[in-house]
Length: 348
Ligand code: NAP
Ligand code: ZN
Image (tube, rainbow, N blue to C red; front, top):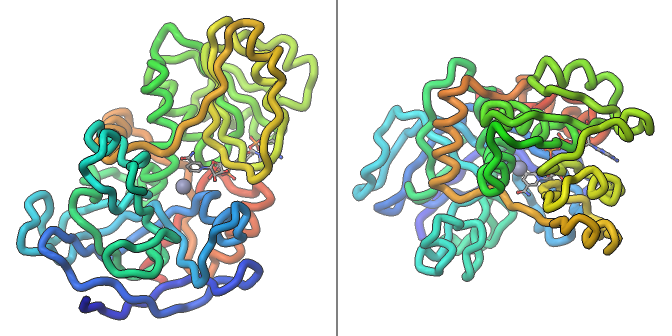
């Protein structure tokens, strides 16, 4: 297959800083869209992957899966996009399109294995997929999102992973005005979860380990902000219908099962590497559910983008150059970000 060489930024080992790399992108197939990448968000999953926290990272790795750009070329059979359009690519870039899950719009659960936008076996080109820390992205138009014309375009990039990852479970568990929702962790995912759950009409309580974020949580729209290290605040906290756990590191989930109403659900979206310990008593008493959720399908991602545009929701973001991204990963690791780094890809 014909390819073109593209400039990218990635690393060849877990402990090595990211640096300039050359990668190959495929020459457009009839249904492909090529975009020039304008902005790319930095998700904690990029950090887990670069560090090989979960195992399974193939080096060299080019991270980035909150990819916002402008269409520069379209294949002969493309109907959804034209040159000059704003476009987005999130986590999903290929799926079988005929299993039950693809059929239902849950491509992330494709039975033949979904292809992610980075560090995933590339079924078309061979090798691995390379993410948005690069000049261009090429994929089938089915997986490309229409980007509404957000006023603050860089701040919209994080919706493509963080946004859909919290929107999808909030929709699935039918969150609305009569529901009390707890958000655990105020990071990239958590701060968008506050905004989206509020826009859905829920009564939102956030749980944070960071004293400095307690006040900020209210500014972001939370009704109640609880410092989770303060026993008294935890004891006085009202019971929740749903708690969305966005925490990236090991923590005790039993504490939060105890904060659910009867029939309440604790939904994990954070991906700490270590297995979690769950007490059976905390589930059986109150018929509680312990569950998880993984990003969201393409149609739902489009729905989320349109929802966020309508409700004026974007990430609180810090725009950085690609050269600053190594520092940004260090800061993300120690929780020093309010609340998402976004890379200005023109600096690559
Ligand atoms: P992030 O910006 O680093 O936020 C994580 C937050 O977790 C931190 O801001 C912090 O919030 C809290 N936290 C960190 N260490 C903690 C600890 N030891 N104990 C308690 N709380 C702690 O990360 P993110 O980009 O939002 O991603 C969060 C997690 O979701 C990552 O594991 C990522 O891989 C995963 N993820 C999953 C999906 C999916 O589809 N399921 C998609 C994207 C990302 P406070 O300071 O408020 O306590
Ligand atoms: Zn992500």
